[in-house]
Image (spheres, rainbow, N blue to C red):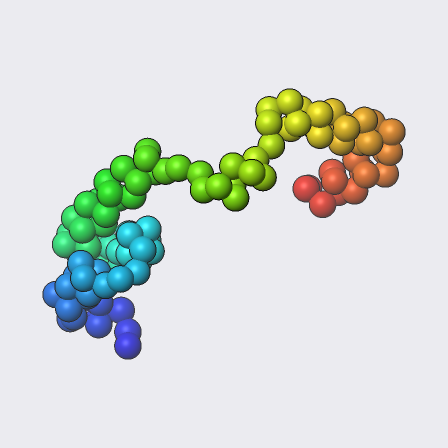
Length: 103
């Protein structure tokens, strides 16, 4: 299969993305790549439709019970940041290593 196949089999690819059982996010991402490769407007149109669905899902996204049980409070996060900040202030080698690997 080569890039021309994405043009030649456009209708089959569109139909597949409208009917398959994969996540909406996966289909949206794949269509985005197809549009970038081919600039076929049909891929973009379906991608935008799926993007709107994904955005709506994000708006109504809820945490499950396990996520709620393991969630840190804001104060717990602040405490951890303070704790790590003290470690960094006391150990210049860590700071040097961080800067070295970031640059």
